[in-house]
Image (cartoon, rainbow, N blue to C red; front, side):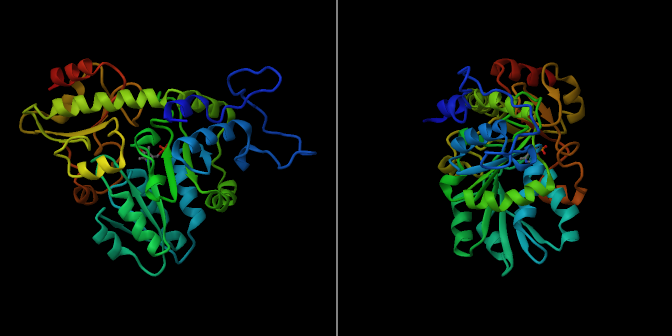
Length: 374
Ligand SMILES: *Cc1c(COP(=O)(O)O)cnc(C)c1O
């Protein structure tokens, strides 16, 4: 099956009695155990609603097995803590999600996990690797500058050194990019974003080989970041339209990125689908389309970023991303607020940088709102 068909059909649990076309919501936290092959319990990641969405997500990401979590950070922290122990080393791309960056700097030292943040060039990644390096962690396109990392180059090197690779595929979605095709071991999503898609759900996803998921499952049960059946069903419902939502967001974002480039009050536009973007050639190699995220820098001599945000009428300055409505945020005040000025400067995040999460509205209306606000 192709992507849109998988979105609709993969993983659906057919109730044998009623033959309803949708997966029923199994509200139980208590399941009988006699004559049942395994003990079923929400925190064991094996209830019917959890398994239904995992099956759909595995189909979409071409992975064998997976786990659904109560947040993206639960997915990220569980994956990392289940695979590392005291004395191990992890290499992380420096321009990753601010929360993941903060997770590393706030927690790893206490557990004796050594880490290095590096640029996304192979030179820097190879230089950072030590004898005890167990994981290379990347995010492409990255947040908020849409930096593109060559997935195949990273996994080729990692395999030669017996190092596991993890990718945060949140921005791309499985519609635009399947990292498993390029040799990635573990794919993570903040399902709060495009997978939920309506700004009303918090969840996280890990998919990988069956062997790796088995390794992670025991720690996952201990850390307990599982997800309830009602939210699982909402995600199943959201996933049915993932393909058509993302397709629309891809088209809107490209139109808007091209338009923003023509405005003299905008200094710089970041979008991996523009030929002028640094990572365009690699993006074309590993992505089917370029996603719904566009970042841009206002010319602060002409426009005050704070006033610009206040002037917007339809587009709300808001946290998070990936919903059907267009929203905007200043990373300095949101995703990267916990970083020091120095850390932000190193990442290229200025006070004038804005990140647009493009929705499914008509592109003309989004452009009109930005123009009037400028
Ligand atoms: C939001 C986000 C996360 C964290 O997900 P939560 O659901 O907020 O815990 C991780 N990675 C990326 C790229 C994100 O955008």
